[in-house]
Length: 83
Length: 233
Image 1 (tube, rainbow over the protein chains, first blue to last red):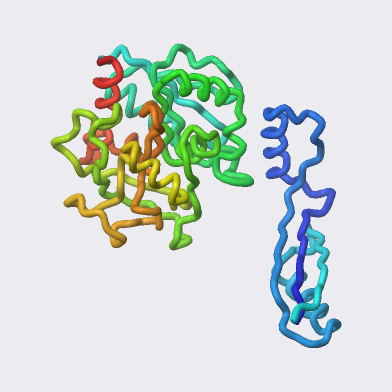
Image 2: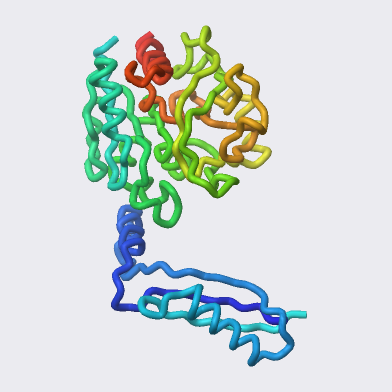
């Protein structure tokens, strides 16, 4: 079994209103050096297969079809074997 | 009594600010100022209302960004000096993020946005927000929220009870508090609390939405009139 940790981020050219709004809060907090705040999504789950390449295939399918929209988002992931 | 001045804070994404203005000014005859979130002047308000809505799009967490708005610095100072502050719905969420009230509001346990009239048992009839409404110890007030599931750890809960800070609980129309009448999963059916000093109230239900007699329910007026009667006496 593998533990998958997926990070989904908006592509750099896509506006991130949430990140912008949060940065206003950061500035009010006095953090004026904070720039380019962007919000992503962290998703973790287990893939119950023995073979790592099969796990990778499933994670890619999950990411491409459901967890992200490739038109506006990039994703990356790690896989770690768990007993 | 109508000399009482209310200040209604307007955050980007507030959507009950005008309801509050209408209820307090047009129906109840109080002086009301809007207070823009970028300002820091409370315009000599006696009571500050943090209205419902979705301030800053509810980004990150409800109330998390609004809590750092310039106006909130003044509101926190005002509250710490004993000034009367009411947070309704999103306003309650902001008060929790600001640390003016303890606990947190989680996603409704049903995962649904719940919009309906609920009954509230008035648990503390000796607060500035409820004193004088004893003869009506169950109020009918609408809720409209996705994140109203109040949670606090046992230590905080005990403190709330010891100091009589729980003001409203979700109940039946007869005032019976049970899980059946809990619309969102709140611990112990909590719908509204005050701080230790009793000058800050946070509540999920919307009293400003039940003040107009044309709606056949004016229970919200009881709370605003109680404030007017109590803070000048």
